[in-house]
Image (cartoon, rainbow, N blue to C red):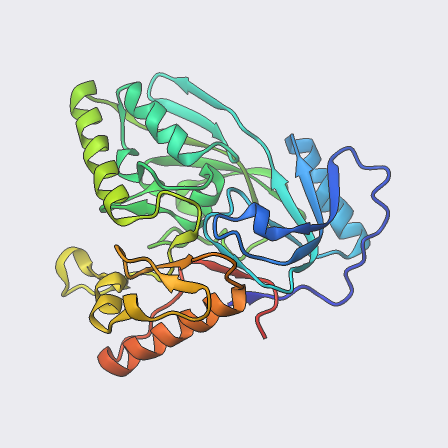
Length: 312
């Protein structure tokens, strides 16, 4: 699914806002893919109040908006985005006993590392995953059988109609690599997690093992959006899922490329920007891979990444 902004979006006056605004800002600089044309506007919001202000500005001037965290799960169109990209830079972490309160813009990898070093278990399987805590919640990020929603208590949200409110974990509609936040106008501001104390050395060893596995298969540099396709849920398969990477490897996906878009040699489900790749090249490559898997296995892969902007 692509997010297509309304044609009515106009910039409106931004002279009287308190947040920093940049015009015709390259989305490529906001994503780990390093791909994407210019956004009409990007709002850098350093507080909850500025996030609210940015949304209210968009509502008043009928401007479409989209929220980006770490940009680690996005393929942005070469045509850019006709509207305002909102970057909530709410970046804090507080630990009280086994409860952790963290801002949406806090680095997920940094949070996991700090929790491990504090002897708090429950997030270590997410070691090394790029992006922010807010983005991870929206996409229900996870790895090795663990999802970020597993230890979540609740989320502080803002919605243009509901205002500021708190949603408990069971109100968010989490499922595999998905939440009901994904296509809503809700903006994640912060969240609370319930972890548990565990032996520090055991926790460190588990996190190190997971990191070693991740870095043996994933790029160390920002050239991708992580796994491009979701694994296929199948109750008859081991662990209840068929790995998309396995199917892509079997159909020879690693040898397929389009222009400067290719497949990572160590993981067939990671599409990469080999240098100067366009969004249209990555999209064409992804469609070729999907079609080949469907022809061979009769399975329809679905994207884990968000397609932002016009891909027509």
